[in-house]
Every structure is written in structure tokens, then in C-alpha cells.
Image (tube, rainbow, N blue to C red; front, side, top):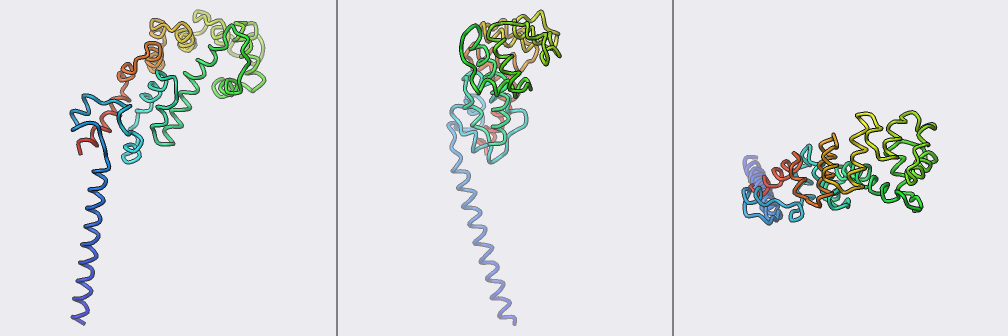
Length: 241
């Protein structure tokens, strides 16, 4: 029995040694699999550029740090494209896409039909239904009125429920809206006029930053948000491991 016990113990030791070797090999693989354009953490902190790094795989490994999505929506606004959102994990990418499509992309699409005879697209109608929470028929009616700048629709239901906001938005006149409406109207006006000064009148800091970054075509403005610092810190910590 003693002989068999020694054989069994030797087998256990051999198996554990094998597992240790495999684990060590996997750890070496994971470390070598992380390819970065930076030589160390400090270099990364000094020169971090979202376009140069593999954020998707990094966040897939460590998770998306809280508060970082606003950085990606800002970049999306500057690029006028949702590509930045696609750098995130699927669940985070969807949050980023919903925000981008519901704010920047929708407003630009809406402004593009102003004072034109352009036909309403299904994408624009869907955006209205999601963002303004009107039914399809009401959205079509609102969008047609916005095209013409005709605020008379605001006296009719369901728009009369918030006629001040409706009138301010259709006329693009902030003074006609309530204080809480003015920030959104200012956002419309700023994108229409491509004016940084108009962006600065937007009360919401996130929207104001995204507006200014888009109008200036300057991604560095997005780096002023806390989200950028968290993205950079999370990625550069991996570089320093």
C-alpha cells in the first residue's frame, strides 16, 4: 500500500507541475500578446492616442472603466461617425451608439432638411420617434413643420403640451423656450451656424464639449473630459505591467 501511495503522490506532483508550466506559458503569452506603441507607462501617459491603440481587446480583458463612454461619444461627434463607439465592448458600444445617434447624428440630420424640399428618411423619422417620443404620424408632421420653420403646429396636440419648447426648436430661437429648453436649442443653433461661441452657451457641459469639438474639428477638446483620463489611465496601466 505504501508503494502505491508513493506512486500516486508522484503522479499528483507531476500533474501539478504540468499545470504550473501551462499557467506560466499562458501568462507569458498574454503578456506578449499585448502589443502597444508605447515603451512604458509614462510614455503612454504622455503620448496616448486612441487611434493608435487596441482599446477593444484591452477593455475586453479588464472591463470598461466607469465614466469613459462620454469620451467615445465626443470622438464620434468630431468624426461625425459612430466608428469610435465600435472600439468598445458590445454592451458599452450600444450605449455609446444610442447617445450619438440620439443627439449629434439626429440633430445634424434634422438640420440638413431645414429650408429644403428633401424627403424625410425612415432614419430621421425613427430618430424622432426615439428621441422625441412621438408616434410616427406626429413625427412626420413635426419634421415637415421643422423643414418649413412653421411653428403654428405647436398650438396643436400633442405638441401643445410643451408649446414653448416646440416653438423655440422649430424657430431656432432660444429666447422663446423655457430655461431647460435653451440648452438643446442652443445646441441646434451652434451646429447650424458652426459657431464655437454658440456652443459655449449650451448649459450641459457634455453637449457643449462635443459641440465645440465638432465645430472646431479638434479631438483634443475631448481630452478635457474625465472619461479621457480614465481611458488613458486604464490602458497605460496595462502597458506598465
